[in-house]
Image 1: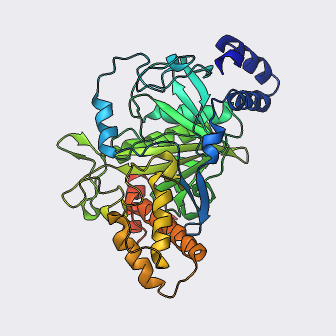
Image 2: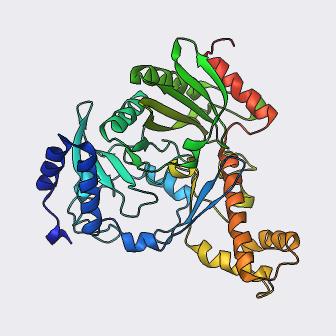
Image 3: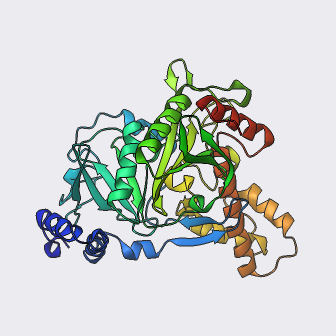
Length: 415
């Protein structure tokens, strides 16, 4: 398809010429090109299974991704330590544009990237070939540098949502276990999609001292989220940076929260930016990547009893309430549904306990279609538990009191 795709310089020239009079049209044209030349794999995406389930936190989105393999958190962490030497160094490098591929590295001959500048550095804007949501895009550093959450992250995310109207922008965390699947190349994700977390209300509001014009609060969400809203980007950046710095050094052993162990840091943030009602908004999701003997994969990571559904890192997209579940679940969900109506004697070993629990709860079940609905709803309930496991401050009286201790440490005004 590279033969029908304009050269990179032409694509960029067309984009910025159109952008001068209509940013929305420029974005739309580039999105259409990325579909027409088959860079966005529409046929593969159409095979994905997607549905919604109710929860205590609003509707959650469940997808069973049938196009990409499941990744192990330990493999993701190890990848950050490997010295890059190949060309392109990773699948996010700008050199992938037009690349014809090699063993273990896909061809990108029809790939096009829009160049733009942020704070004097070259960045790229592209779409994701295997989109998880509407207009799923990636903003990538022009240089191969590792993920890093800093004041610059907040500056860039807010700049992106201003420059690309209608899109949110968010970043995976920069530490193993709580980070995304690619830690070796700094990048952000965005798109035109309203996630469940965006719809979640504030369950407590307050104002931070020195930032009286910023509306702030704790989001009613299974993970630990501070939402900041203001028409001033500078105020949001300054406050977000203050919260980040406080969180990096904050410990509360009463609720198993430690900033570091033997000099190894545990705390970071998953930030999400959006612009709505002419105001800028930042969601700051507090992350902690401690491990323990009881939870060797991560204290704030899906625990063993739910890893039969989700064992991968809880990255940006899941944080916001969209589950990306592995392909194996398509057949396994159907297998469990058959088991519930007596059409099978057993299920995959790691699902057996779950299947038996469902069978006890629904002992009079006869129809396969109803059984499938019950199993899919149960998958959604387990995903809600996955997010609760990943939440630093639990949705309990003790957990929320501990959350407020951190907020008070940052410094809030009295009621």
